[in-house]
Structures are given as structure tokens and as C-alpha cells.
Amino acid sequence: MLEHYEAVIGLEVHAELATRSKIFCACPTSFGASPNTFCCPICMGFPGTLPVLNRTALLLGVKAGLVTGCEISREVRFHRKHYTYPDLPKSYQITQYDCPLCTGGSLTFSLPTGERTVEITRIHLEEDAGKLLHTKEHGTLVDHNRCGIPLIEVVTQPTIHSSEEAVAFLKALRLRLIYAGVSDCKMQEGSLRCDVNLSVRKKGETSLGVRTEMKNLGSFSAVAKAIDSEFRRQVQVLENGGEIYRETRRVDETTGESFLLRRKETEADYRFLPEPDLPPFVLEEEWLSSVAEELPELPESRGERYQKQYGLSEEEARLLTASPALSDFFQSCAEETPYVKLLAGLLLGEISRRLPADPSAKDFPKSSAPFSKTVTLWGEGKLNSTAAKKLALLVWQGEQDPVAVMERLNLGQISDPTVIRTWILSVLEEDPSFLDSYRKGKTNVVKAIAGAVMARSQGKADPVWVNRLLAEVLSAR
Ligand code: ADP
Ligand code: MG
Ligand code: ZN
Image 1: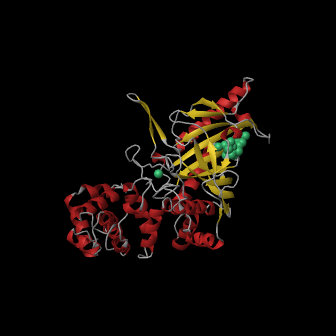
Image 2 (image 1 turned 90 degrees about the horizontal axis):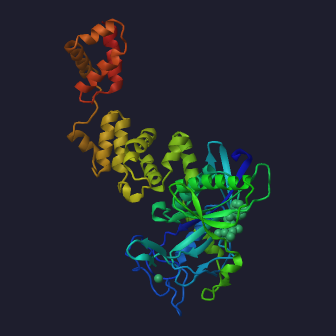
Image 3 (image 1 turned 60 degrees about the vertical axis):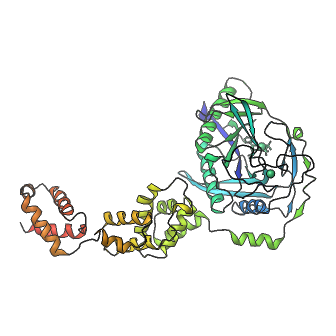
């Protein structure tokens, strides 16, 4: 039955903004503090307190809009959205309503089936609520540290049709927000969360079905599982002659299965009203253009440049731009060594294996020069690849002078033909079975001889010379 239906999906993505203090007060935003230590009368909503907008939160919201091709509203307004919940001490959330900061953007990304564009309806600023902790011993506890953490909410059009598309969109969005410094988007710390709205319709239909909303998904795999499972559930309900209700559902993140949480509130339930303590104001053109000038080069355009400028493959370019810290380090090395292909291989192999999934600048050496110098030594044939990798790791761990280390550890590559020839002859002499097999036509023994010569040289012989001289010696026998 599934193949007769199409999923229609719109996402609402919340990202915590990378500010040091909260959106309307001076409390710190650091993650992992003891409960209820980073809050004050303002973010707790005590009567008589006054919120003041954090300038950086506004700046980051504008940047989010600019890197997703949105129009930036010249007028900034806030509303109160009322609902009562134990993690919301004010019983309202300050958010944006009829005048979101950014509107009408889009994001294009590639899938195995080709390029896709998803339209972004709006991006607005708002404050986060607190967090409930459900414990066995003490029942449900409230931590207010998260109250007032600045968020953007990114809302897409309902033009996504599969879990693959949804995840690809989220990955593309996340990478841009990280590059622009809008958010660290650490999903494991909840700085990027996603609500999935999903309805189904028969293929070929154009009207929208009734949707359900699955709240607060904290990983790409949870998003994918929730979509696949909810799609199947809705199709099954309709096929059995049932009806889909507009409702909010809670997702079990391991299975993707969802359960009814509540039938959806309507907009009137929220009693939106203009926030009286934050009067509307106007953004100056000059400030907006200075923000636009501050934006970094985005991953896609960096990747294209790497392919053109350094002859890297599309895959290499994509991997090297998967984090701004890696891309920055690559870039500064690429200006210091002509052997950029070797550099890319080393960074994506030996080094990437030792980096965390989301590396930041502190995971890289402060100066790129010793690393680039190592690559140059390799490129010039002064090191073979095994020694180059070894030296690169030592430099990564803090060695500053690769030439000195190379000499101290005797890592230099030997490409002196006379020396290599002596090694070949002694290897053949010590183990006559090598020549026997070779004479019997077992050509794969050549590899074994080369290996023995490499071992004799303690890995330092230049393999190109070993193979060349070995061919010479063998053909003369
Ligand atoms: P609300 O403010 O009630 O959450 P919105 O109109 O802002 O509603 O839409 C929220 C999200 O739901 C958007 O991402 C939108 O694309 C998506 N959406 C709206 N209608 C549908 C539908 N029929 N099926 C799937 N997604 C939908
Ligand atoms: Mg919503
Ligand atoms: Zn506070």
C-alpha cells in the first residue's frame, strides 16, 4: 500500500544561538551547570523585571537568515505566546509572531538522486523554556538554566517527501549555521532539535492532508525513524478507513514509534499579544550590510574552490569542508606547501581518524607550519609515506621542528640506488627460494622480495627505487 502514498513533511528546527549570555538577561548560557544556578529574576519571569534584547542574539539571527537566502525584516517585534507548563515559569514564551526576523529563504543540497531545494518559510528569534527531569527518587524536577537561552526557529515549507530528504536538509542547514558561527549545533547537547510535521496523500494529489507533529527530535536518526514510522502509521489508518487527527506526538527515539501526547492547540489558545516590555525597533541598513560583510565563505563554495584551485576530487572537497575547523586548517597548510594532494590525503586519512566527529579549532595545532613542512618533506621525497605519516602524527602531538625529529628518529627516506641495490642482493642471497620461485614463473614473489627489502631498510627505502632496481636485478638473472 505504501507505494500509492506520498509523505508530505515540513520541519521546524530549533538551534541554540552561540551567545555567552541569555537572550533577555545576563545569565550565562554554558551547558552542564548544576541545576538552577544560571538563572535570575528576569529569565524566571518574576513580576516587575524587564527583559533587554541581547545584541549578539539578534546578530546571529540575522546571519542565519543571510546564509539561507532569506529576506531580513527591517522591523523587529516580539510577542508573548501563552501556555502553562511546569518548565515555563512565566507561563508565556517571548517569541516572534507576525513579523519574523527572516522570511522566504531556501537551501539547496545534493542527494544521490540529484539536487534538491527546500524553501524556508521563516526564521524567528525566541527564548527557550526550562527542562524537566523525571527521577525515580524525587519525582519530576525543574531545571531553569535553559530558560531564556536564545533560539532561532527555522520553519520549512511542506515540500519534503522522505526521511532521506529531511536528513539531508538538516545536515546542510546545520553545516551552514556552524560555518556562520550562529550555533554550535551540538545535537547531543540539545543545541539543535527538530519538530517533524507529517501528513500523507495519494500520489498525484496536490492538496495537503491532515498533519501530525512530532516534537523535539534530537538526532538525525531519530528524525529518519520518526518519519518512516509515522508515514506507515498514517497510511495504515487511512487504508483501514480511519481518520488522521491534528495532534502532537511524542517519539521513542530508538524505535521511531510515536504516541499521542495531546490534540493540537489552535492558535487562539496561545493568546499571542505584543510584548509590552520590548518595544519594536528598526534595523539600520548600514548595520545590516556590515553583518553581510562579516559572513565567512560557505562550505559549498569552499569545496568548489578546492576542486578548481588544487585539483581535489569532489569527495575530498566535501570531506575537507565538513567542518569549518578542518577546512580552515587545510586552507592555511595549502598556502604553505605545494603538495596539496598529499596534504589532503594525510588530513583525511591518518589525521581525521584521530579527530572527534565535530572538531573545533582547539583540536588542531595552533600553527600549521610544522605540519605543512612535513608534507613538503614527503613531497620532495625526503620521507617515504610510512615515515611521513609517523612524523605527521608527532607534529600533530606538538613537535615543532619536523626536520630535527626526522633526523633524530632517523626517518629520512633512502633513495640512493647503490645502497638499495646492496639490500636487494643480500635479500636474494640469504633466501634462495625467492629466486627459485621467480624462475618458476611465480611473478607474485616480486612483491614479497620488495617487502623483504623494505623491511631490511627499516621502512626507509624509497619504494619507487626498490621496484625499479628489483626489476633490473631480476631480469638479469
Ligand atoms: P504551527 O505554527 O501550528 O506549527 P505552521 O503553519 O507554522 O503551523 O507549520 C508548521 C510546520 O508544519 C511547517 O514546517 C509546515 O511546512 C508544516 N506543515 C503545514 N501543513 C502541513 C501538512 N498538511 N503536512 C505536512 N506538513 C505541514
Ligand atoms: Mg509549530
Ligand atoms: Zn537570567
